[in-house]
Length: 226
Image (tube, rainbow, N blue to C red; front, side, top):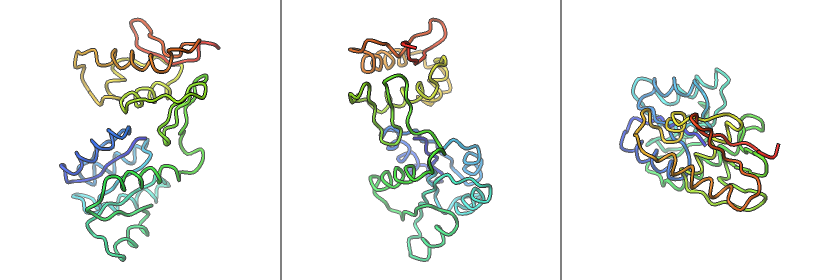
């Protein structure tokens, strides 16, 4: 799941991004309302987590503008303003849920996942399938031929990106940017190590290999039986 955090408190945002990443999700951060509005308008997010009081553009204004544009991406409002009238105002502005600060991360995570499940059918693909391999983005599960496969958060994100681009070559640069959030090559074998571990989990013991190395280009996941 891809989540946009619009929060001007950098320490709080860093904690939230780290915790969401450890939970297996992709978290992007915008430090003010204008940047957040621009990133939200670009789309591609499953859920928005929006602080109400932001510099440059107030959180509720971001949500109201998105709704006027017809963008129904679920939005969870975070705010130190937690009275009933404050929550009502936030929900009427287009927010889908409202959580007062301070909050427990476990509750925020549960609310974010619940909002993602509420999205209308067809709005976004939540289950990827390649051959007998299936990945459920929202349930955070992977199975092959009905057998559960346990992946670490980074392995899950790697497999998710590969399956999202099934049948296409995915380069090292693409993986570094989309899975590791690196915009430079750290000159390490981190990708090779994770690909090897992932291949061992999804292909070992099965007749048909799904994860392939395309020499000199990158990697591809496809159903070789077809």
